[in-house]
Length: 359
Ligand code: MRU
Image 1: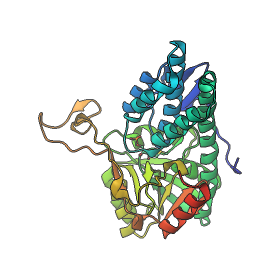
Image 2: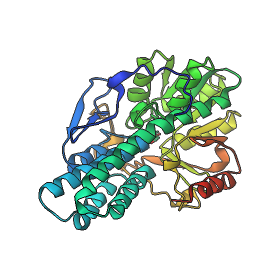
Image 3: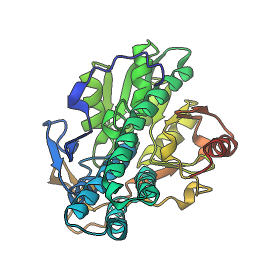
Image 4: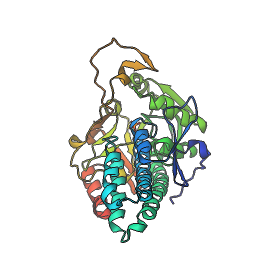
């Protein structure tokens, strides 16, 4: 495990995902910050529904949840005496069809299905899948700890404040978080004084989740609406931006929560570095550029309503892309578990891919 100069204080409350005795327990992120509710998933259908509804969300958390969804599917099929090798691909397909943009979902399921192929005896499939899902979960912890400590090198000089968008924290991962992991670590080392959190319309992951997560640890946070980010930069209130990623192409184009692109354009205009923190499981080594990244479009009611109240005229036409792609030219650096990547990203990412042997 990387050297994390930071004591994790959040305890069980902030665990997005827990696995025990054949049950996947998810912290219901749609109920936060109003109430702390947990969802016990006993079958893969419930896990798939939780991913679709954003009860579990954030690229790494979605990947880990889907891995356990496959375990639950395998357990059910085995209990029914079914042929796992024949039927598990359907379960994997159901889970794949939940959300299209975060590549971690597809990465985790591909990794899980490879286990099925590598196990010689059918009787060992369920146990091997469970072991692999636990490994994915454990690795995510370690990877986020490594990202958090590598991120410190970007803050040799302390800054007053950074801005973040959406939630790339402990809730979005198995533990620590990616962008918020770096922020936690830098704050603990006296390198960051405050976090400005964009509220992140339409589903308010910044207001509901990032603000809550940081306040749990008394990290100073100031909430702003998304359209205030430019003015905050103009007033020189933030000296860096750090966000997470749902999918990164070979050239360094980054898909992340809708609104990230606007923040990156604003950061460039104000000469503020724009950092992306992401594990290698968020890289899509099959895509040359971000043009090929599928962008999820969600229900119009998410835009036409606010806090459960309809705020737009009935029948209005709505466009609701859940993600956007920030072109690599706007990205200053990408913080990974292998270190900080700098432009030209195509060279840096190609060398990481070579080290890994691709995937
Ligand atoms: O729609 P969401 O809430 O799943 O979107 C999440 C994000 O865009 C995060 O920034 C991204 O997944 C990185 S999480 C470490």
